[in-house]
Length: 84
Image 1 (cartoon, one colour):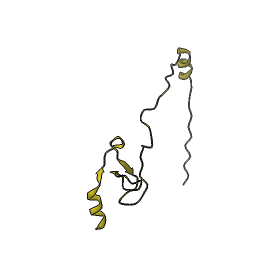
Image 2 (cartoon, helix red, strand yellow):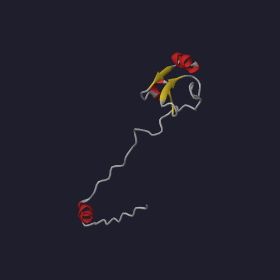
Image 3 (cartoon, one colour):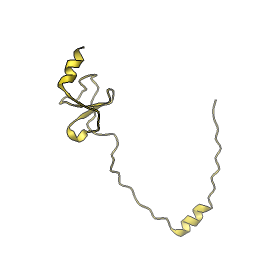
Image 4 (tube, one colour):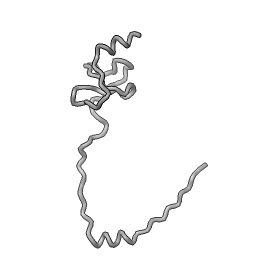
């Protein structure tokens, strides 16, 4: 097959390695190290960055004792309706 010789000439990785200069193909589910913006196998545009950031900053909130007492009294009633 003609694409096998092409794949043997490019670097392929199946681990997350955007920092190593690799780009991700969403169709092939593999990382390729190539200068082209498109996947050398299927032609899909390659991702340069991950979809989600790992280092998200979260706001820390302290719960007061008054609020804890109020939360203990809250009751939740659920009714599940399934469509068939």
